[in-house]
Length: 120
Image (cartoon, rainbow, N blue to C red; front, top):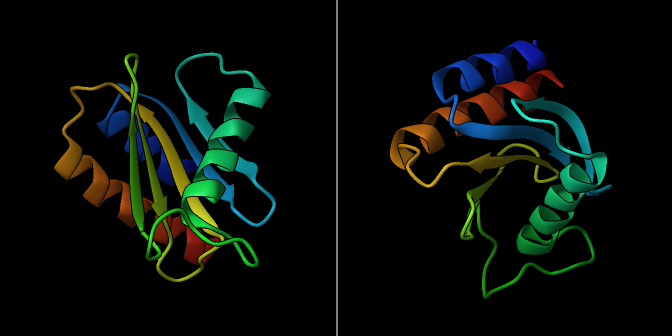
């Protein structure tokens, strides 16, 4: 079920190079969907960046309050991190093109995350 949910999101947004369902407490990629060959270290670094931005048990988040969505823009791509509202250790880490339709993508990605988080 989780793999199919990521597949559907990837089909709708093929300009997203990677979708990673992650466990923030362990900073590990649990399920991935990529249209390029990312090294395991790259995927794990996404998880570590999400954990740093969102915070984990015993480690505070960056900023004054806990966020549910984080954007990191680089010259090459846009990284989007979404934290589950139901399980704060679950996150979806995404590497997208700059011209991704952000509003619709974030809405659909959040729904995908919650579907996976409840089913995982």
